[in-house]
Image (cartoon, rainbow, N blue to C red):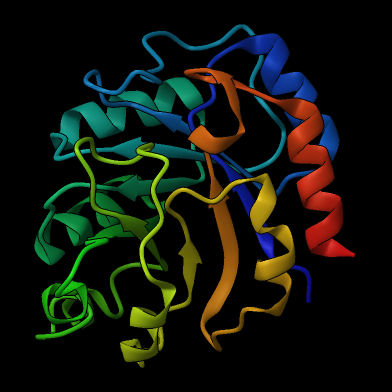
Length: 212
């Protein structure tokens, strides 16, 4: 089965159109004002593929407001949201939930991983997907990878998307990397010409190689 490709950090209408033509599976819109890819207003064009609203420690009211404006299919919670809050979002919006977790890219990352100690497992049955990203200075979009081998510690049932500094040069490696619960790839900053503007040719080449 071909992996799901999620392109995150979109906001420019024409760029959205061009990326959509590639045939990607999910498109993410960052609803967090501290991000350089913050989508401060609804673009004049929205894609027909499922849209993901990306939030960091939001209020329920803000999530609901954005859902109405953007027509999201998924809510991605990328902060310190509790399982209880995730459940509230699911109940209030009726949408699928992606819960993101940040993994350190440093010595001792294995010991500090959220995959240990039951943190990730506490969201089982609440999130439809997990997303594993690299912990960095900013929340997401840091362009840095974590050591994928830490995911050998992941044995829960919820499928996940692999994220964190994935770039055009990683297509071949990803074709040969396997985890039974990894169903897709999330790409963002390493495919940009500027924050929020994606390199369409690079994404098309990457996607073609990955799905071939």
